[in-house]
Length: 115
Length: 112
Image (cartoon, rainbow over the protein chains, first blue to last red):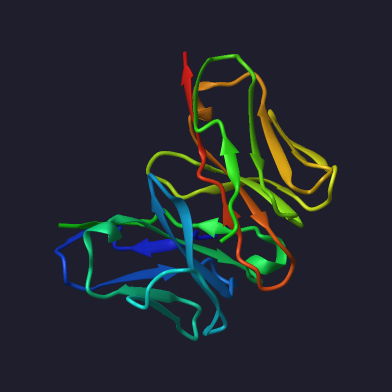
């Protein structure tokens, strides 16, 4: 069974640009969650999508947005990039959502560097 | 937002030693989970705990859901080099549409 796939794995952007990250969940998983991981803050919850609807949203500015498609694949977008957005962005999928069992399956992440 | 206090932040141990780490909160959690992240990888679920007082093992790993529901600990016995990584605790405040809250992690280094 294929795991969670995130693309791209690495990318470098400059301040003010925007970026789109993609996540393909495990087949049959309807929930996709996104996390930002930085050395100082650990894993910070961005949002969760379930069946194309945003179910939960973390405490991030509106520059961070996401969506989920009918095949459960998800994208997140960050506009007007800032230096502080440099981080590892992790996607996690689950069958019924975080709120059910809390058991998440993570991808390897997309490492974003903003110069 | 909710905070999970995870300690220690990092630890260096000799191969073969036992390891203990814990997570505490001022809030009551209904679920506690422990994840491990290897370098360059995403976190992987090690153990999930759903009931206060529950003690669960997974090979050399043992985790407990604190009786007050405000804490959890993870023990690793007879550590080996592949135990190196970052261990995260995660808690769920209530069942339903509540996202997990993660601790900041314990970075474990094993000296052979």
